[in-house]
Length: 372
Image (cartoon, rainbow, N blue to C red; front, top):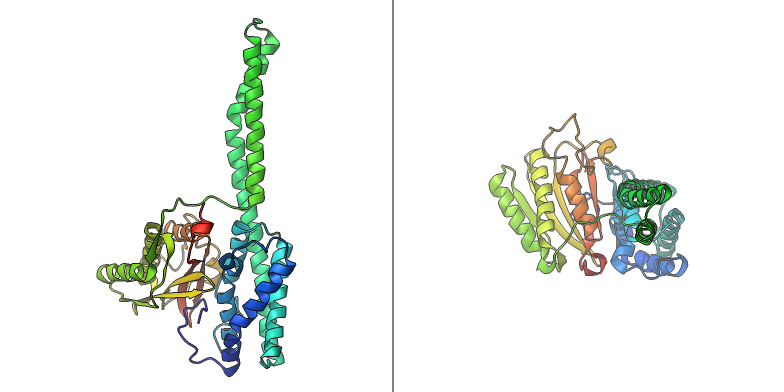
């Protein structure tokens, strides 16, 4: 199971849910082939980036198809669809219509594979699948648009600040020419105007390149090859010593190329928060992999994070002034988000009273092609 609530197995799921899970690889094989064929710009996107959070979204659909499951559709209790839109904005040259087209092709692939494999869904079950996809489209586009808006604001602020220096030189030099100067100094002043005018032109070109490239600032990473299971066990061991809540790790050895220091700090932040805000019944780290991506999640039971706060908890210095205290949330989670994004991936949260709270880091197993 790859679902965002860190469900470990298919126990308790309906027969239909299990049939849908068995279709997953076939659905994504069909979907990827169609996306690369029909969507402009998708042909050269590497496989882990193309699929990003969609396998998790898919398993969420399977969960929602089980009657009386806490998840009413694939987007309830989680921001996994928003993470998809965020990553599309950062990692591709997509426009909004290409994201919509992706989900349309996903719906088509799901339906086609279901027919081929004889998986029959009732009208109510198809309604869950369709509402999951429709909601995911809205959430992905909203986050995609927000990311671009935020990036433009940051770039505009940087531009207005950095352009002041060459602009000041141009204005000052032009003023000197207007009031008169010696003939021998005129060429030098003119060169200053020309050089700084060129600087302004270069800065504008860099701004346009950055905006069209759709990527924000990233953490500096030192990539190395290591086993994330060993890292998780080390973090869990330290947490068990320093916190009352027991910590456990499930999953198999998985070796990849990541930044060990930043990934350790991100995992430590999540484990500390899970122990701090859980109900004392322990913290669980899970390691999984799918389609060239590593899924690293941290789970705790206890009071859920209100759904209205899901889109805010990764914001720098944001605090929930209600349920939680005011220590430890304003910097830790934004850092986790920055680590995931700098590795070419995403972070998502899934939280409900029934299933507890899970934070999921979803990044490529080999991050070298995605880290500049």
